[in-house]
Length: 296
Length: 249
Ligand SMILES: Cc1cc2nc3c(=O)[nH]c(=O)nc-3n(C[C@H](O)[C@H](O)[C@H](O)COP(=O)(O)OP(=O)(O)OC[C@H]3O[C@@H](n4cnc5c(N)ncnc54)[C@H](O)[C@@H]3O)c2cc1C
Ligand SMILES: Nc1ncnc2c1ncn2[C@@H]1O[C@H](COP(=O)(O)O)[C@@H](O)[C@H]1O
Image 1 (cartoon, each protein chain N blue to C red):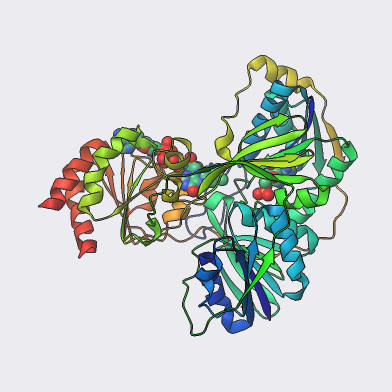
Image 2 (image 1 turned 90 degrees about the horizontal axis):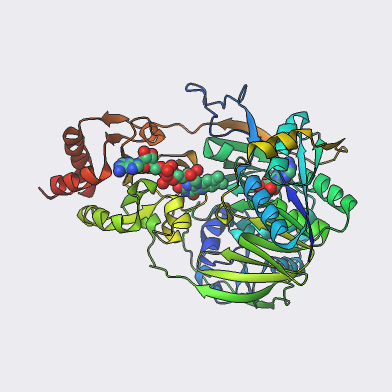
């Protein structure tokens, strides 16, 4: 079988390639500058696209590589990836499975798992899907010997123009690899309250993460720290949820944690259904007590 | 410029009220009320704001069932001018949905932009923006947190992992929005009453020959959490500190 993997982030190609490489020839497509990240994972060839990537011109470039040549096309899920997946879906009349976090090839078919009903259920499907979007971080990348050759290809000029670009402040943290996460929700009330949480983060040698409103609406934390269905999927040894109600879209991102601790002043908060230890109370009273208990 | 806007509205079961069977994990869908999908509401709000600013018309399309009237009335109350319900929706099948909706949009003609959610809150598919842009041959401006129009060009701001971008394209455009774009309005009572009297156009979807995946299972993931709840703060803190210390070794 022949597989194609697309991601604008070269590192997202590695895990999917690792999963696929024993089943056939795997080709990768990424953006110029990203290709170096995925050359040690047993891919047959990597195409690096030169130019400013938008949905339309990436789709055209993929068509030039000739999508009909491949048995299956995997796209790492991202805003760009999903736009392209939709475009491909309309050009090759096939079932498309989106947001898969696990899959198995079953002869001519593929078995996939994804969340459904906003994260309340896991939907397992079997289909002949030719296009599958995959959640980043779903498969562990493993290197192999040898180096993948790179082919450069040009992106056409997009009909979308970039008028302005604002680089974002990035702390370069990687909450997915932190052994302990202290995660904050709307319950902390204001950005300044983070100062009161930091002693706990330090006491557990952990990292700070947060719910979607904290990272996206209020921007108290940067987006790379968002946990959830539309954020990072984390599996720390300990996940400490402070002032997070535990909506299903949040749970979907931290379900893999080993031990979950929740602090919430509402006894009926849904997070208490998804925790190992729950303390009902004001987080601003609980956190200092916990810090001093840990220091003893 | 007065803008001819189409907004796509999905009706879903209220997933916030949805429970799963504690034993089998099956979703208990019976008797769960229907409501407008989250991102569709953001889309309506974005469409109505765009019309309020530039003039024009907002046309709502629901590919749904006979039960979609309530959703369209709510959309009217929020400011949608005319609504089309296409019945025959049987479930999540993006390719089929896109073909039904794009046929309707072509039939309407003269559309400047199609506004829809970037990923619906229940199925979380996110394919319709790309599908529709190809099928309607419109430029795709994806994941907007703000939309404006100037001289026949649409401009959006979008938030990516590493940067924020302002991008623009010539009309007609498909514009997908994220939930951060706005806070959907709660329409006043008078508007809701007026909306109830407004006619809704209805038609049935033509059959489509689209394969669907076979569902192996659709159940809640198992949770083996201990669920030890402490209302006594000091006792809770002691237990939690012990558990954390155990994991820090
Ligand atoms: C398509 C879609 C995708 C989404 N993706 C994500 C995602 O990836 N991640 C995510 O997190 N959300 C996501 N959401 C949003 C999600 O539905 C919830 O809105 C969000 O998780 C709520 O965040 P929160 O728990 O911080 O806030 P709230 O729900 O407002 O909860 C705040 C909690 O703090 C408690 N509290 C208040 N004060 C205190 C105090 N002093 N001490 C202790 N407790 C206190 C309250 O009792 C409450 O339970 C998504 C939604 C949709 C529709
Ligand atoms: N059946 C439908 N009828 C009308 N609009 C829909 C339908 N399904 C999806 N949409 C729109 O498309 C957006 C993205 O949906 P999806 O691509 O299915 O995740 C939703 O937020 C809606 O705006």
